[in-house]
Image 1 (cartoon, rainbow, N blue to C red):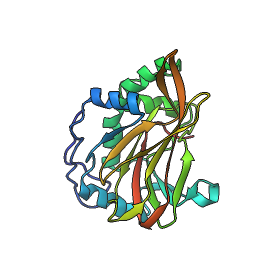
Image 2: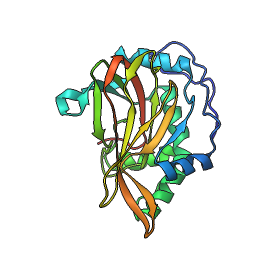
Image 3: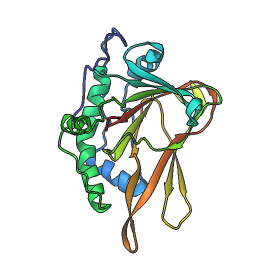
Length: 251
């Protein structure tokens, strides 16, 4: 993966130029191995502490968001989130673009194993053009905010016909300092078997890559498809912020 430097957020979001730390020392091979074996991969320190603070502090700004969702009004849980609007802040646009290329390779391989016809082009802009031509033109990166007692029900981030199979969540808050509780949870529903639950350990600035909807799993009779959902457990104290990067756009 390329390492990004001197990334900045939109002027309405912050007047500062932020020193982006870049992706940690994890190879694309290791990332693919972790995703195949565990169903997720962690990139330690993917976002600098300073960037985390600026992103979280920008939640209360009016720009650069297109909408705010109060989760309890829709049965999604408790808490709230805001979708960024185009043009995205530079930091988020570049994160999305740089993550896409290695994940598209994994996504193409996974879709082949799961016998899903959809394939992904080499660049994120090419994929966004496909989404936009199909009427999926609303930006999907989002910033989530949870307070005491808030939680996120198990769900999948599907916004239309075109679905990129992987997404990224970046924890912006410091566990045990900014908040307690609020664990990131994945569930894996296997055919004719009970569901498997995974609590993913994250620190401030860590990014977790995980499936949007399905992932292939190898069994004694070959490869089969498992259904994935994700959520966040109840916040016991403090406030928790997360940046979500989804690579397909919404209708």
